[in-house]
Image 1 (spheres, helix red, strand yellow):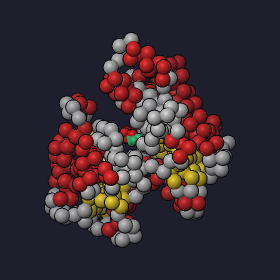
Image 2: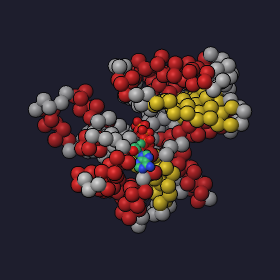
Image 3: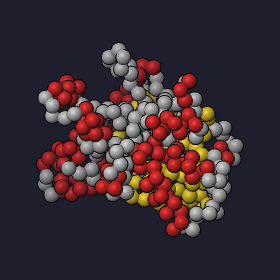
Length: 357
Ligand SMILES: Nc1ncnc2c1ncn2[C@@H]1O[C@H](COP(=O)(O)OP(=O)(O)O)[C@@H](O)[C@H]1O
Ligand SMILES: CCCC(=O)OP(=O)(O)O
């Protein structure tokens, strides 16, 4: 099987190629200055496609007729987990950003564009809007505002399935709390194979993160608006891209925070401790949501490489359940795995319902 996987992030496009039994991986980095010249995420399409084509050419893969091209799913309408064929409705919803703007919206669109060259199918897998929330987890506290499932579904599901395998038990029979800790942080309660509660990773919910605020005191936010300190678009950018650790310390790099702590920087120490504290509170809350029946806590994402963070979290939440480390992310593997399951007929692709749903 020959499969191309495309995983666009805010400042990189990760590529995976399954070809002749080997998997090649590459991280094409895009300097912020280059990305920031585009107003909307969709405007980056031609630029990213060119980067992908240049990479394929550099690897002598330009002429490969892929059996499928698979992209990271974006902010679609809420859907069940699985592998989705990129049909017109799905491509349309990604291009208009039906549930918001995010680099991942380009995944399915780029995949479709490359696939169309050879008539291959294009897929997306476990998009961030994968929605398996319990009804009780949707209630926000204000009638008219519903909590939404928007999280690192692809990586959380991949890490959870991997840990289930390590435990020697079906994913559908165990309860895990999975914490994806990257530029944004989401913690999900995986109850017998379904993510029944999770913080919204993009809209100001959950723990603070390197580049995101997490949950904020609402009245404080309203007062910033009232006093004209920020406009609504500026506040949205702060919540999703320039909040969290960045807003306190001017960096999104936890390694730099740790170096500063080692040099005696008290502010860096306070923010690091707050990061640990807020993640631990999120995990504790999800443990209660699962009635304490937790088989494991899974730490994944780039921050899980940090020995100091892992040790601090272990000290705070280790009483709940054993910790399992899956540092980094497994999105390319999960994308290729999803496409393979469909191509080998182990799984039927799902049809994205679009507007009628
Ligand atoms: N060895 C490490 N020790 C501490 N932090 C690390 C390490 N490796 C990566 N990180 C941190 O992980 C974060 C990036 O995580 P990542 O999952 O790559 O984010 P994203 O994919 O959301 O951009 C950064 O804050 C980075 O500093
Ligand atoms: C929470 C939705 C997906 C997401 O935020 O991904 P990134 O952290 O990679 O931007």
